[in-house]
Image (tube, rainbow, N blue to C red; front, side, top):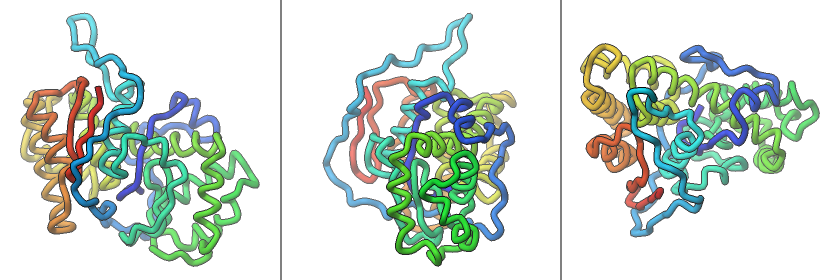
Length: 307
């Protein structure tokens, strides 16, 4: 489960990517199989020192999402351009880059008690989602370079142990990450566990693209479950009504960000919360509920721009 890692846009439609390795996207709010002893620690990578650098989006400019009209609903975060933007926003906080596609082969123990963090969304050997990814991928692609580590992955699930994984697992992950089918598998599992549930829940709550992204970043960082994203949502709903309940979208999202920030600080006093303070909160205060571009935001003192 992503506590700190990286991000993503599916290079193929979600359903096709899922089919590529034998899973179907779930519509359940918390589809992750329960780990035997998963940790609930919510820590990202150590904050990077603030710099004065500016990161400009290297990709060609895409059209801004259109405003709602009487005969056209606002775009949601699953629209291709917005989904790509969401991956860039998360990657800026997780990896200090807009190039989320550079993370397929990432693998490292970041010292957060979750074992190895790896891949597009920061799957962890200690939080069950990496094990599920490799099991599903191996079912569709027997004999892949990670299959031999399945016994060890099952043994260390729910712990921070490397037993049976060192020294070869990191190199095997990086090598397999060059295989298109494994990249598609990472994208499909990311969508099934994190992106699709966040977006569908936000839409049920009456939230537009910014709110959907706020939910998505929260489930990526905190994980699903009552001790993670869904618990934060429940506490926010106790403070303010969602738009689906007749409340103000801006007021509700402000309450959600307040609860999430407090949750981060409670877990780790002094943690850098700029992914909220100078990114999501900034967009909300600007009234940019549709996540219209251009966007400018800061994380860890670094400035990012998407035209």
